[in-house]
Image (cartoon, rainbow, N blue to C red; front, side, top):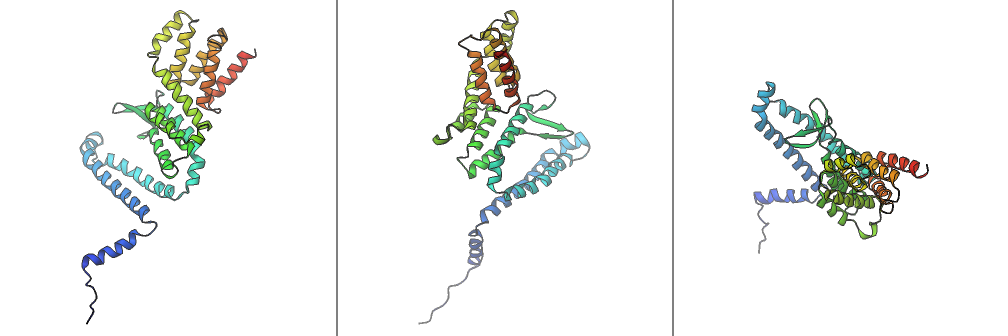
Length: 291
């Protein structure tokens, strides 16, 4: 009996090397990298196709908008390659500084002259010229950290804080619910919990102008001043919020069983110990209490 070797088909000759290539440890990394580069290239083509007429009408060149996008690709691709090579420990150490920077940028979006509106959404910061940044993209960094370390408390709290700054209260609550039970007492988690509680209180208070009118008519209307402080805090006007509560403490320390001071302490907990508004409020509170 004569044995013959199995026939090698063209498909078999393609599949075998492909299977070997995909079995390598770095294969998923290169698949994601290749897909990213391909989608970026297709995106540039689509930008050129969609914007050429508008670009020509605005600048006399059909390529102006596409060239600006290509410039960011040239900057972004090397940054992507560098970031992909960094160990996750780097991101863990930098998570808290990134959180502070992201929160500051999100507040700057609301500052007249710095934050700009694009297509009806005021979520951009104008750096100068035609360069703008969108602070909400900082959420992607925390999402990347959580993908590798789902129980990273700093990243959970950071992403929850970003959702809160963007007005996504339900999303912020969802991040708080994702905190492991054994880490519920972490300072970053406590700060997020306090900030969510304050946002929920402020959401029920309505228009601040009516409260301002009540205070103008009666400076001793502590209820209006207290509610206005909650609204100011929800709007990111932290020093103004502290000033309203400090005014109550100055006029009547026993109001609501020292409620103004207690609320101010809650603000400090939500803002964090190094926040400029916390330092400002603590300094003024101390001078009032010990004067």
